Structure formats: C-alpha cells, structure tokens
Length: 176
Image (tube, rainbow, N blue to C red; front, side, top):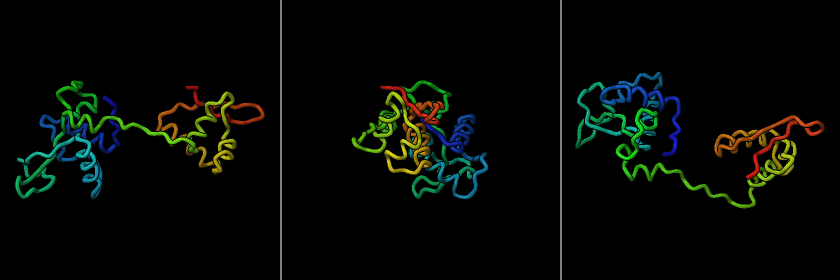
C-alpha cells in the first residue's frame, strides 16, 4: 500500500479520532478557525479516511440529512492504516477504495524543460544553476525552485550538490 500524505491538520484530526474508542471526529480538538475544519473533513471524506454515520449525540453533528437526520463523522479502517495504527489492508480497505488510492501512472512528455534539466543533472559533470537557467531560459531563482519543488518534493528525486573550483555549486542526480 502506498503511503498516504496528510497535512498537519488532517493528521491531528485523524489521530484524535483514532484515539477515541468510537473513532468519532467530533468534537474537533484542533485550533482551526472558520470553514477550515469543514475543508479538512471534506478532503478526508474524499480520500475515504473518514465516513458519515448517523449521529446519536447532537453535540457531534457534521450536517443534517433529510432522510437520515443528523450525521456525524468517524474514522475508517483506512485512517488507522494511514497513521500506522493498523496494518491489515485486506479487511480495512474496500477494493474500490484501494483502486482509487492506487498511485497514478506518471506520463512523461518528451522534449520538455523538465526532461532537459534531468538530463543535465544526470550528465557526468552535473549542472550549475546558471547552466540550467541558460538552457531553459529561466531566471536563476526559478531554476532553484524547480530543483527543490518539482524534482525533490514532487518527484522525490535525490539531488546532490558540491562546490567545484571554477564552476561554483554543481547539482547532480544519480545516473539511471
């Protein structure tokens, strides 16, 4: 099962719910204000980490449904797995949820600036920020942001750097 990335607010809400005997999300113990709690809960609902159930305590109502009446939220077995509390994936995650949460296939277009930068970083000598900026027609701060954002954070690549006399800081990716 792939690791589910959670924001700090999502982690706090889920861990609090999972610590309760009934798995109830409400009352929320986080300091979020306004509609932020609703937004976090909606995102957790979309990811099947919490589910709607009929509320028995009116102090824990999430919303009112015309047919079912007052509705509250509770943690699903997938939430316990995401937090590392439970590890039995066969019973905890329905097949349709597991399929929806499966990692998406990443398509790489050819001839992109991303592809060019990756090739430069994998070359034997690596590349400096100035070389990347010149090759892509980017400003130097854009090239630095691309390395840390797109390559490190989004694609999970490990970029190394070292000072080289006459060139400055050189960035490299391990060869494939």
